[in-house]
Length: 96
Image (cartoon, rainbow, N blue to C red; front, side, top):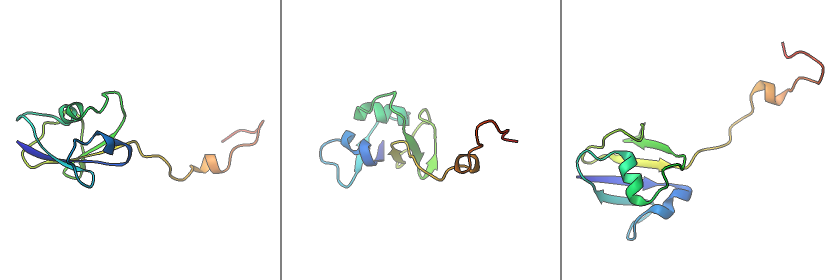
């Protein structure tokens, strides 16, 4: 079955030759999971990543269907600090 794989940022280096603009079309066996595709591309199993299938968050063990779009992102960082981070409690004072 054929699936579309889109890798972003530092994961793009795992795309097969001939891929264009971070996208590869792969033929994979029926019953393949996102983890199977990542393994086939050489992405290390312990490498953390954000995984979407057809635009929805999914687990690596979810089976893929023909025509699925698999997006893999490296972990995202950043964001705003929490209130307690922005206004730390002075030493010797209670946070509550």
